[in-house]
Image (tube, rainbow, N blue to C red; front, side, top):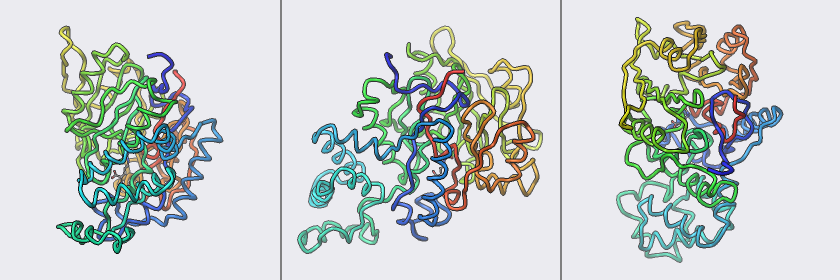
Length: 414
Ligand SMILES: NC(=O)NCCC[C@H](N)C(=O)O
């Protein structure tokens, strides 16, 4: 690939460009009734969440990182031609079950009544049934009165969009555009697809290793680039072993890929640790944060190391010791596993719940973390990591931290 627009060959190389989404009105469209389906445990106070997010973005910019916003990129991509905008609307509506018919037409017309920026903002925030001019569209009332008539939304809000790590994942000079697990998040990666396909900065400059038209699930919080040969991918609530095998197969055979090892790490399937990066992140060449709760009492877990065999098929080895496996695949003699919350029975799960293990590494040995996880932050400092703390009361209610809120697009090679 000539002039790639993405370059991510590690978790720790100096971060140069990152993709973000500032939380918007979508967060105010969470209610107690919809919270669980929308994957939230509480309703953040939007004004403060935005202030916190701006502080996070500013912290990155002060450290030399270019911040791009997915909604801005989407506006620019859809603005390339009116056909692209119509193609997007058609696809978006069809994925919500509106293939044709009165409701489809009303929504299409409504979306086209906005300028592009407002249309994109509206799609993230969701479209309420009562925003449509019902007098004018009398027939629609009946069309909409089906089994979902009690749902206040015709198009659901996307409050998880500020976790830009998950709908896609940068790997080397390419990306996976993810088929996400839950309906609440599936539309998010359609924005990525259109940005990668039509935005002048990305179109033709990105290898798509895996697109979103797969039936098996994968999310970026599970996809870690340990170095330019080795990936770690969580087998989790959000990522299936089938997707991992499919991605490994592609990376092992595609000439533009230099990856030859995929370490699949099984983690508990629950909401507190829905992705690998909520329990395990890389902070330096030989240093990782780990939540002790992912191992059994003997410190063991299920790990499968995938490599290509002579026939281009996948060879798999079963391991149970995380530290030893990492040393082997990364060719390290020593390894420093930094335990979240100092491995304390109460502190570790409390801080993990608020993403104490979810560090965003911006250079080797330099990270951004939530200030509320002060025990884990102290541990990092004791292990000579430079820690930039960001404010976190409201953002953390969505169960994601600095790594979840950022998708690196460019890191300096090590
Ligand atoms: N990489 C991550 O762990 N992202 C956090 C996603 C949180 C969001 N509420 C979700 O459940 O998908």
